[in-house]
Structures are given as C-alpha cells and as structure tokens.
Length: 156
Image (cartoon, rainbow, N blue to C red):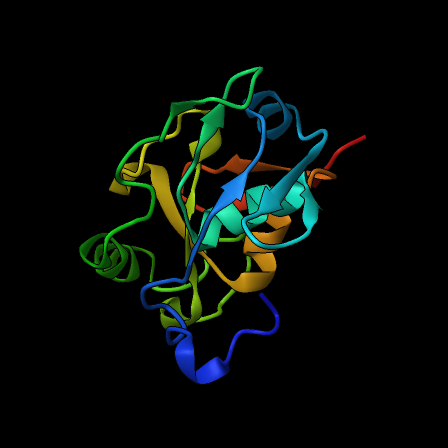
C-alpha cells in the first residue's frame, strides 16, 4: 500500500481507499495470527485491525475449509455526514489534552467494529492519527471519560 500513487489516494479526512483483507475471525478477535491483503503479503492481526479502522475493509469471514461464510456488515465506515457531525461535536482530537483540530482527525469506533461495534455517531469519536494508532495499540487500553475525552492507559 505504501507504493500507491499519492495522486490516486483520497485527501485526508475524505473517503478512504478500499482494501480487501482475509483473516480468520478468531485471529482478528484474539489479535493472534496473520491476515493477507489480496495480492499482497501476510500481516499481523494488529496491523489488520489498524487498517480496518481507516480503510474501506470488506470483511470476508472464512470457515475451516476457506469457504466464505459472511461478507460482513454493509456499513463499515462512518459516513461523510457522521464525520461532519463528529467534527461539530468534538471540535478536536478527543484524546485527553490533545488539541489537534477536528479537520485533521480520523473517525474511530469506540467499540471495535471487528467485535460487533456499530457505526453509530454516539459510538464514534475523533482522534488524531497519533492517538488513533494508540487506540489500536495492544499495549494500551482506552477509557472514555464522562466529558467525552479518551484517556489511554498502558497495560500492566
């Protein structure tokens, strides 16, 4: 993906590139094992989870014999209208103490989409790229504070 022509990619904050990734559901949930980008190399489950948050991933759930069991939910990403509403609501990255403007932020599912989270406005939050990566870092947990901010904690 690093080799895609920049002029063919969307602008920051706009519609994202669609990538087709295969990974066993258990691997995605347990963050173990690998997934594969169609036409690409294997990647860790945590890398697949990071991609799934910002790219238009079409989840293909495979059974034991690699048969397609489910093509996933049809609404994976936050819509442009939802992202606008988040920009109005959040104003900036919602990580505690971060002031990166909302226009530079990415929409994040508070409940991981891969674990049944919904693409609903009240379950989404804007995070800058740095904090969005932190939200998917398996060495950290995220806590939503009463004021809507997100506080990150290092796992023991």
